[in-house]
Image (cartoon, rainbow, N blue to C red):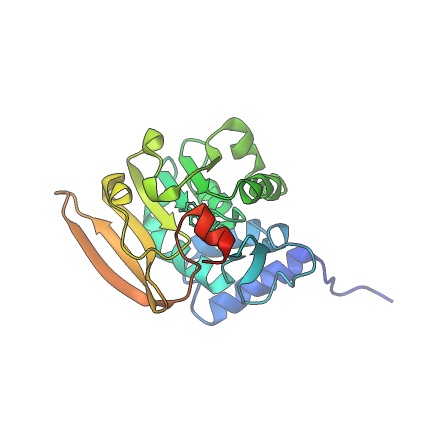
Length: 230
Ligand code: SAH
């Protein structure tokens, strides 16, 4: 019988992207293209369904965010993810968004992921190596570091875009300091009730903050607190 459709990962990932476009979560071709190229199947641990719109456990009391949250953050940051720009991904977890950012800013750009669980940092490198962002990792425009992301990563600052993948009780000052004038940070803020806040640093250095939507992320905390179960 002729095979009209294959259930391989690429098709399922494409169907997920189309679903997010249909519901208006992905609004730009730029975000659709990068989410098609970075297959979520390379980031979700074996035994979990990668192409459903839901967060998944990745061990160490952490989760990979749901596809609609990845898409929302990429849409909010896309003007600050132009070729050559600098990006910081705090709590980079599986490395999914880190890989998307790297493809968007390209080889002339710089993307730094910071993750405080060494095992997650190591597995995120393996995940990224399965994607078209592998060459950027090899050439060094994309790097993953193990450390406390609340301190940022001053070496590659100032950043055009900062993404924080875990909820802060308050916005860490080092991250505000490392944002470039004209730069944008997207960060979940709160405890049980959290808002996804968009922090814009204006050209005169002043800060404007607006709340985009209610969200639920794991906390941005110390490694010990996270491994204890918070
Ligand atoms: N965007 C990631 C989100 C992973 S969950 C993804 O979709 O895969 C949030 C991550 O933040 C976890 O991996 C957790 O270990 C990490 N984290 C929490 N507090 C941190 C801190 N202070 N410094 C660095 N990473 C932190």
